[in-house]
Image (cartoon, rainbow, N blue to C red):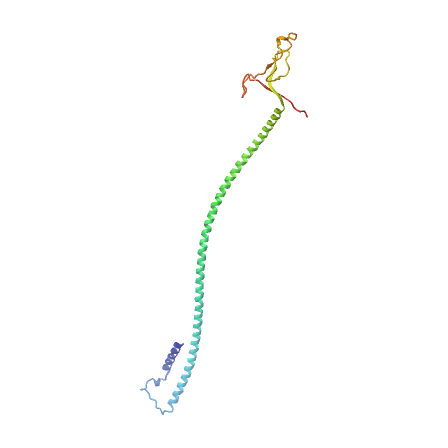
Length: 243
């Protein structure tokens, strides 16, 4: 405010010096007498008029200066506000920059996880293909096992039938019979015991000569698997309950 007052005073002096009447610019050109009753009042009137103008001009200048000070204050306030907003914007930019960096880090992490998931998915697809192949193989093996199970059941039934038959056997022995051309022979083959009792000697029977045949044990006359030629033919006597 002090600087403004000094500036205003300098401005007024400049106005006064530039607006004095031309006849007082030099004392050598014209001298005014103190008892001059015409010139002095006229000059005083001019000076008063000029001073009034200067007062009005001074008020205008002061008003303009006040308006300028008000504008400068408003500009300074606005400048301070803009400065604060700029600082806030800088802080926001720094914050956003930090968030952007964090997002870039997160993006890199997500990209790595995505690649890992793709790798895991490929592995799962490979495993799924292997499992599908294994299931197809197991399905084939299961069908084979079903067939084998059917065969085993059939064989088991045969074995059970054999066991049932064997359980009904009362006696086992060796098949036997007579020559086809001998008289007195039976029609069917006989099942002879392993330890038969000795019969009556043929030589002691004379009244029925030619009416009986000799009984022989049956033998294989060929080789087949576990059977050898001249092996005895096994037989069994089986009993079965009638329903």
